[in-house]
Image (cartoon, one colour):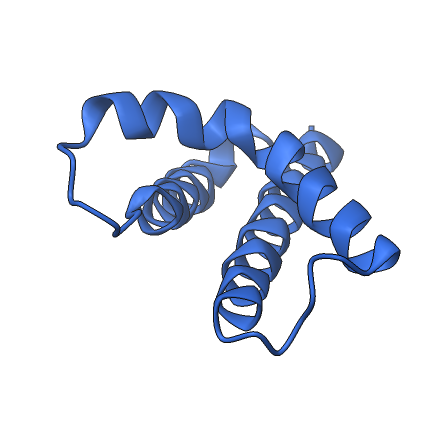
Length: 95
């Protein structure tokens, strides 16, 4: 059961990394540091967007419209941290 705990923590860590990468990349594209017309940047951007949309979609439906500000990555990160805290506090169930 310890391995199940470690696998869950790994999945949450990978999800957190993808959210951070998507967040940073969105800023770099917005400030024109990265060009979306480059094939690698375009593939990476659309791949991350398609990967994270199932996470962001339900959060965007719940949050009110904030104009041009998208708070769904922050809410997703908070949810990931909350899940990690819950898993760590209940590690006794996995041992």
